[in-house]
Length: 229
Image 1 (cartoon, rainbow, N blue to C red):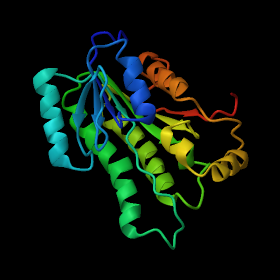
Image 2: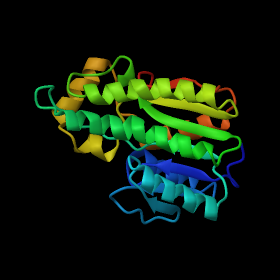
Image 3: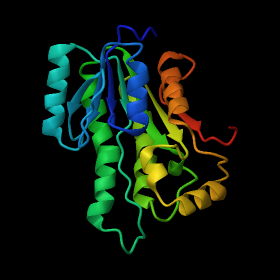
Image 4: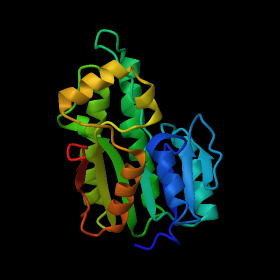
């Protein structure tokens, strides 16, 4: 796939993987749209403020895209929320807010993207926590990512003309990870056998590979865990 004329939509584009990916893709295409919620993006790619848990705001986003670009070729769902605490400290509101962003928000983005995508690619950013690296403090996050991988497979069935894949990641050197308790992080890396943090740039390049490489079939869950790094 030649990315130069493609309209590429990225959620969670104000920091972390989404921001890095948007900067790299903006070198290939002039039609990159970064979605942010709280932190405004000041870069040389298009950006739009939108809370992906609010359908009314999402409708405004997609009207903007339809009026300006007329289509979407690629959607990468990077936006995510994680609230780590013990089950007895975790409220239902916190639990559901994680699911609402990570699963509900992604569902809405995919739903409305499909209306502007004749043939294209959707990449959902998942986690190895969906299957085997979860811990007791992030049961809501792990559950949301397990649901996201199932959603990826069912979307692939529903939209046979769209390639829908998920990229399941271990720990990545995002700002939020680097700001967390480093002793806990090191203990988790040791527990799951990850030698070092995945680099944001490497993850971004892997996402681009998923987009352009036809060897990855729709419905695939691709793992990038850093064990061989």
